[in-house]
Length: 218
Image 1 (tube, rainbow, N blue to C red):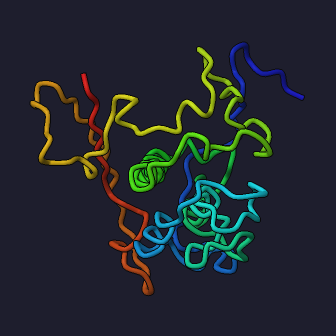
Image 2 (image 1 turned 45 degrees about the vertical axis):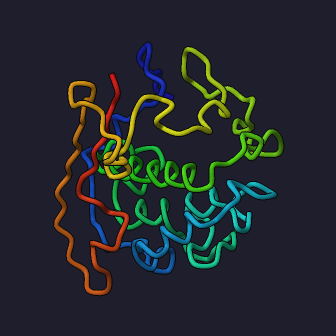
Image 3 (image 1 turned 30 degrees about the vertical axis):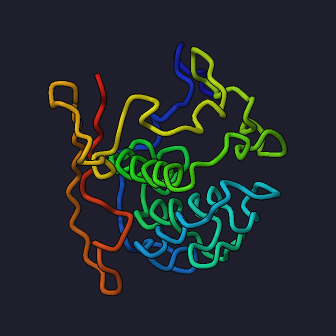
């Protein structure tokens, strides 16, 4: 076994360049990329999570958004992946590898949008803090557990709050009637242009957005 250089936690030297082959994936696992209707159904689920808090959980927002619950019925252990997981498989390359997916710039765009869905769910349902699991969640995910490997230490339950309480906002969620003076806003714009051709799904109805803005408050 090759010894890693000092300070290296994950050796990515053998991963090679970023690879993409979108749409040429296993359609038995992912039929297509998610639709806006499936995003809306996921947002409608009132419970953040349900027992047993794994991929078999039914009517769980967390499980459905993650991609293991059916985005049309909310039932867990779906035979096909949906939502977040579906796009990873759809990209059919580096994004489909758990170890290497973050090397693809599309990873940032995709997860930023998934996070914005979580933000919309928080605002729509205004959940009580007690909804966040305190026990029986997968190891490392209970409310009082610390988020590794971040320093300083923070507990999972501390982030069951709106992004606005953390000092940033999604531009497409801004209430235009309450705009702050522009001098108090820093807007970051991420843009990735993709050319995808496929016959059975309109890009405009998918999770694959071409750009996303973040607004940070000074």
